[in-house]
Length: 355
Image 1 (cartoon, helix red, strand yellow):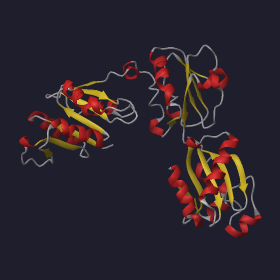
Image 2 (cartoon, one colour):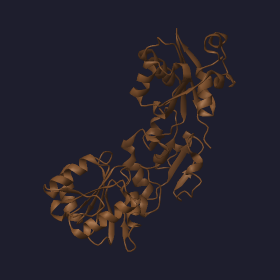
Image 3 (spheres, one colour):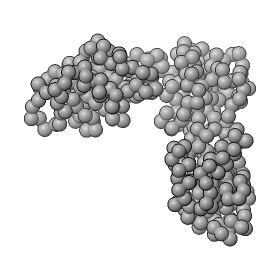
C-alpha cells in the first residue's frame, strides 16, 4: 500500500514525521512555507493545498490528512468514484487526539490503518464508524481478503451486509478455502454454518455467504447470497512447443465450463519445467493474471496419477505432466482428470489441500 501524509501546519508536520518514524514507507507532503532542514524528508509543495490533495488522492492507495475533517471532505468530494476504487482516507486533528477513518474503511483498508496510526500516539483515539466494526460482526466485503478470495457478485454485498449488521439470520456455506483460518473464531449469533446449498434456500435465512469454487446456477441461492471465490484450484497443463495461446484458452475455458468450476478460483497453472520458455503459455498466464509453477521430470515421475501415459513418459521422461503437476502444486487431489485436446494439449484440475 502506498501512503501519502499531508500536513498544513507545523504541529501537523511533527505528527507526520512521527508517523514516518514508525512507517518509513510513507511520503510526507507539506506547504513550502514550512520548509526546514529536518533530517526526515518532507516533500514541500508550492501549489494550492486543494490541488495537491487532489493529485495525492488519485496517485496513492491511502491518504492521511492532518487537518480538519470538514476541509478534507470538501476537497475530496468532487473526486469520489466508488468504494472499490477510491483510496483510503484518514483524517487526524492538529493534536493527534483523534485518528478518523473517513473513506474506504473496509476495502481500502482505512479502518486497519486508522488503528495502526492511532497506536503511535499515547493519547490518540481511533474513530471507526462502519457498522460491521462497531458491532464486531463479519465484514461481508472483507471476508477472505487476506487469503486472496474474490467476490463474484458484488451487487449483493450491500444487501447482505445490512442483514448482517441488523442481526438477521445469515447462512454460511463453505465448500473449500481456508476454513480453519476464520470459522474457528466465534461466529455472530445470527450466523449459522450449513452443510449444503439446499439449506441456504431456506426462508429462515435472509442472506448467505458462500465460499466455493463451483459455478452456482440456482437462482434462489444467487439472489440472497454473496459468492466468494477462494484460490482453491490448480490447472495442470501439458503442451507442445507449438501449442497456440488460443488452444490453451479454449482448453482451459472448455474444461472449467464443462465441470462447472470458476476461473476466479484458479490459484496457479502448473506444468513441466522444460516448458518454461513457451511464450503462448506465458501469454495466457499474463492475460488471465494467473501465476505459473514448474516442476522437473524427476519430481513429476514420483507422483501417482489416475491416467499415466507411456507416450508422455517416452517424450517427457515422466508418465504424467498435467495431472502430476496439478497434484504436486496443490498438495491435494484431482477433481478433473486429464482431458485431451487434440493434438497437443492436456488439462487437469486439482483442488488445493488447505491446512
